[in-house]
Image (tube, rainbow, N blue to C red; front, side):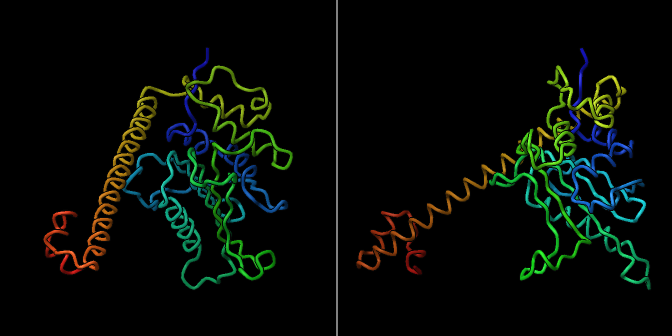
Length: 283
């Protein structure tokens, strides 16, 4: 039986999309809102050195940067757990790519569009929508005046429908690949194998395609995910406890205010609420 690795993990994601431009071209043409007459034809990989670091989950983001033959930039990130700062990170990276296109003195009309793509293994939006497309518009004429040069796309892998009459078939198949292939996979859907690029990506997700060092990196990645999830969970519980304490404090102050209005002695209010007499004096 074939054993598969999860393509959402850093080492697998980069082997598939960071080393095989043909696969990344198929993927981006399928998922991005590109003009029908301007598909991606060829790609050049770019350095990730300028990626901003997020204090939490800094080890659990897989990303690939590239530029196509017409000069458009594409930043693709695979994110296991959602935190709000991801929006700022992707906007920062996309903005950096946009600004750095021009040398000093060059005309602004040379600027090409930049697309930032975030693939999310967890949900960040409570709605039924799973494909979130952001771009600059005139808020009074949103369908007429659009600035297309900076666009962000967030895709929630957990929420997209497996079959849809309105969605592009290739888009859904690529997203199914990311959602369905993992260490639990025993049988691969024939729908996925029918697409040559996805079939190749599935082969690259097989455990046998990785050497010992890469497999160690794969295990380290999931260990980092588990560790950082625990850290985030601990911070959330700390926040809950802090919020609870603040709520209790405000409740005691509210009771003390009412007791003061009724002329009850401060010493008695202090005994009933647990607040100090000095605090009650200033309420």
